[in-house]
Length: 90
Image 1 (tube, rainbow, N blue to C red):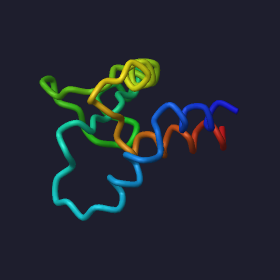
Image 2: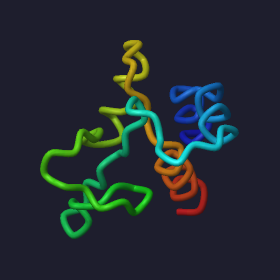
Image 3: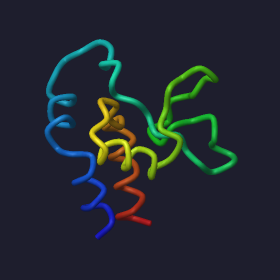
Image 4: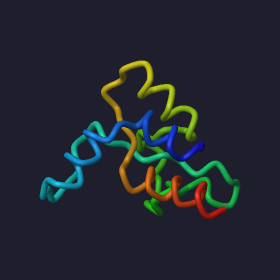
């Protein structure tokens, strides 16, 4: 199942850490995943508006390959949840 594989790539430990801590701002290493649909290209999967100088993952593949290669940058948990929701519900 795609969503389970996607979840395994992103890893559960950092998501649980990010969701369990009470921070006013997220750490700088958590980045949103840009929506690739033309009409939504200026927003992330979680709905955050993306500005021209924001560092974001360009698409889902970019996020997965980055995590697989051991990058410090990890996808936003809200983006991951929304992507899993879309994959599971269509």
